[in-house]
Image (cartoon, rainbow, N blue to C red; front, side):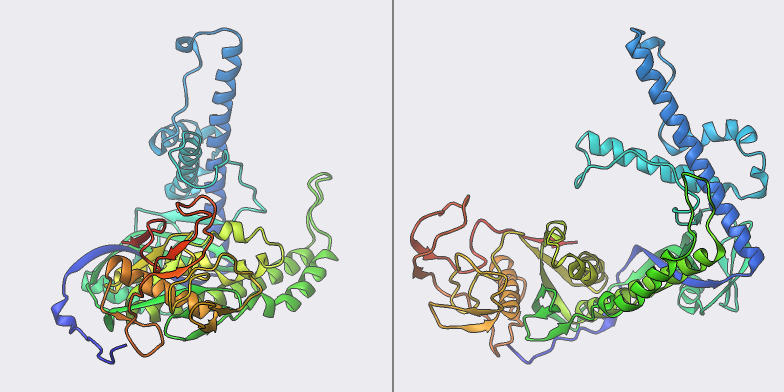
Length: 475
């Protein structure tokens, strides 16, 4: 590995581009302001449930009429699922459905209708195989107790006050921030940011306001634009880099497990709501439930803060970052490791790396899900047929390499980007030298079923040169 560090001056990269970025701030609301925000969130829920009931009624009516032999032209007119169609239907009926509608901003009702329009579109696209991923179910009605209070504003007076300690939102007025909004205020004053929308949401017992902005970001370059680093994610260590660095897994959920169990028992001994008998929850149950929610929110905040610090450091330092396309949903089926895998936040880490590498002028390379990074020797390229999860040390029977399993996988990921795509001359593999692609090693290997060489004996090609593995770049 060369010790040369390429630092490109910022003045040479002044190209600007607009990106969507959110700024989130905690709020300190008075009792009257909390009631006003809850009223707006309730208005959004009412509009959502009314529109959903109307859509279901029309669908059921048309289905019943078809059973009677009525032709398609004579069926009950359909109810449009788009936001403009739902808004027209709501405006025609809001006087009867919600005679108190004048007390809330029109944006509150638009929030619920927009959420329903998106849900219906996702359900329709999923049924027509236009949407990737798991099947999306039909939208459900929102409950006052279970749904998260939230309202979104897209028009009207949305601004940050000059003191940077208050914000102004339509119908809600002047709201006090718990922290300074100087980062957003500076961009707004400089004209490099424009507020698109503002969302007020309650999370973990606290109210937050999130400003979605179109931000003009100046092009940047990583500290080492030609360097490539492989990142292997795991449970024992959150991330193992090909440089040899080990990022420990904080395991915030395990650290808070004792307190969460105690708060859960405390809430279970209180009188909670009962939907069958109509019994309302006691005040003590509500307080205990709020304490449990704040404890879970603290775990989520600690996890999010740690992931942001790690991904920001990697994106600012390395030009190319290589990660694996992990099957997280499949890994969660392991009942022994599901809680630890969910606590690590693999998907969130990859999501943050995707946009942060783009912001900092780097690129994120994603190795194919079936690339054997753990089974391949980073020294000679030989591939093992089987490697149990309990074997934490990789031992190569060809070249005698003995290395930690995760460190070996990280080196293979870094070498894959160089040998396949030629991402850069410098590969940070932790061995003190640039990684050189080895020659094919003659060894008897039984490949995985379904591959071109399954059950054959021959040479093992070096990693990164097999046609069975694809490396994609996130842009």
